[in-house]
Length: 129
Image (cartoon, rainbow, N blue to C red; front, side, top):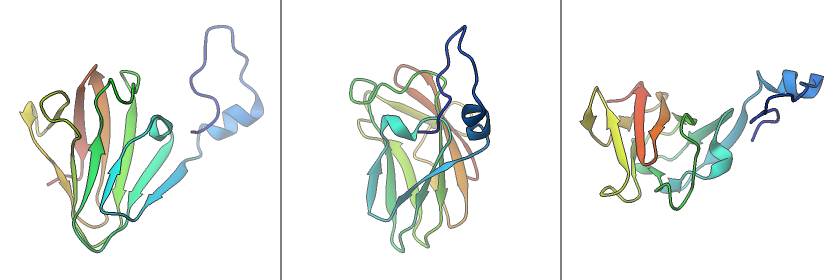
């Protein structure tokens, strides 16, 4: 995770923290399935790079308690389509294209932002199909 987040009232921002605001950490994934972890929050770019279809999974809040407001950025570099979905679809809701529950997909060189809007609710925006 990038340094500098989260900050609390009264914290003093150091030069290292300020410079870290513009830097992204890469989390390169090449497997068939990847489930997000807490360190994917904030300034991390999760890249999916697989020639075959692959899955980007969002866990339940009980499994990984990403804070509400978390944004996870995913970029598909591989030729295989990346499908974004919940690990447990009955518990975690993934919506895109308005209020439509969906499993959005990313073709090669497309990216999306996964935004946590509630305890087990995520909205996906970006270059999704």
